[in-house]
Length: 199
Ligand SMILES: Nc1nc2c(c(=O)[nH]1)N[C@H]1C(S)=C(S)[C@@H](COP(=O)(O)O)O[C@H]1N2
Ligand SMILES: [Mo]
Image (cartoon, helix red, strand yellow):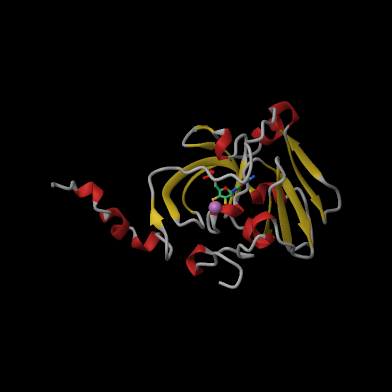
């Protein structure tokens, strides 16, 4: 049987430097949700930064859409071992959002419609490494992939990229989010294979 070159996984080998240990490359975009896809009307959507801030700050959908935007291409890595290379997103940098909420806090809990949460060091949301995205490859983000807007933190495993994100609660003390409470690693660096607590 003839096997076409494209099916032998050469691409995986070529891109070895881009694929973290234990991951395989997929062209699909799997959907992984712990519950049903919430339906949030844009006129009742907001993104809020609250908690350890002087004043909570919130953006309506219109306000969010008028913030300075970035389009960027990154690789994403799911703890279930798929990696998707070269995904292009548009949205607002967390640097832009956090600039409106001066804080001494070192941690954030992202919260989302449907009740999902995930915890991150605030430092990982700064430095041009994290966004709230609402477009994928030039189209509005599909609800099943987190639309209208999701967190995107591509340098950590994809469970840290909360779909249907509605805000951040800033905290001086770190606490585990949804999957972190169920045994996922607290930090989740794919290059160090921090999949489960104890890794
Ligand atoms: N709100 C919410 N965000 C979530 C999840 C979820 O269940 N609910 N699953 C996480 C996990 S485990 C992964 S791998 C990615 C999957 O995103 P996708 O469905 O767009 O591939 O979303 C993350 N964000
Ligand atoms: Mo995941």
